[in-house]
Length: 273
Length: 310
Image (cartoon, rainbow over all chains, first blue to last red; front, side, top):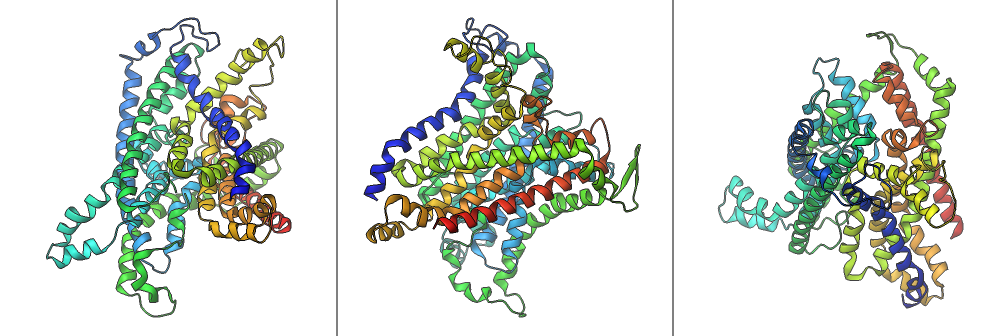
């Protein structure tokens, strides 16, 4: 180990730092140009202003799409987490025939272009006369959220000793009582983390919403519409900055909950480790 | 990312060992309970993903005149998808872009995953979190950021002029295949880092000590132990980047210009203005099949290369 450290220590940390710069630099431009007085995103900045943020206030179509995003995000994250809890429990607790192929099908959206999910749902919904609506977007979002929710919930279940549930049953607690007083409290950090991760994915998702939302745009669809007009770019950057801050806050909370869950179960690692 | 699929140690199922021996006996209660728990999620995916994808496959063999669908079997759509020069070009360019993007993304990601796994120490969780943050900022916004960077009067051109590298803006930065490639490499970085990190974490460090004790230098040890053992993560990363990027139409539309348009833009227009669902379906299925073949071949070549290097 010591030899490799001596060799790698020289360039690996430097490379890692450069890589982080590459990851962060484009993202940091959004907040910078959102407070720029000029409508054209060019350096040097021509002055600081909060006008672009003010222009968002009272913008009905934006507020409307924000509500749509909220509805879709809440519904999709709830549904994905409920389905995910059952799946994660089955995957971690039980060994049965067909377990791996079934799990592989559920994880498949991770390896599929979103455009396929979008047009597949479109081609089923329209001929059935269902029309395009937020409900379809929710169904699509649940599909792409499930792999992430399940991954988070599996790590919750992995550190959860079934002896607690057995003890609860032995002590005379009903099935429902065991669920609400033992199982759910132990799993709660993982559940909340799964809800937040799924909500964040839904909040940002564009392609499925683009095909299926019809006349009820979500925020990314609203942004897409605004991008056609160069003059509205700063306002979009301001909106993007607000969304970025919202995502970040959600994620920090999710990460804190995940860490709490990990501490309870003594599992180390990041989101997906 | 792959954790849920792996047959890793499941500490609490040891009493259930015999359920794993296959045979024609009936399911035991444990198995029934497991299947019952997994079924709702599985059925959901069947109903909203697998079923609809079969509908796409069916449509690809039908034809459409104006708004009526003719359900007689035909391969005409596939003939168009595979022989029309415009679709051939778009498909080849999409394959090229997704191949280059996935390769570069994985090569750039490997040292990072290695650094976090082997030198991250107690800060592993924090480092992973730092790397995932930009990824959560929204796809559209990240693409937009690159548009701001690569534009004619964009950040990069301004910087180049400011540094005296050129005296007038470089025009070819935005609206090209390369702009699409750069943007996608940035957008998919995290998807490559995480699977590689997970597989590196699983390597038993005592193998490395053994190799050192037996006289292997760092390079040889990396080639013979670390790299081969981390191949599942590398392959997972390649697939998770290569297959979805081929179906992207946002990035090409925003930063690709006419020279960077990809097959998904053509697919999307079959469901919009052009409105030819069967052709759109055939284009989708063709793209999926071709990219799967390309991914499979890449995996085989990669495995052979690693075996040869050993």
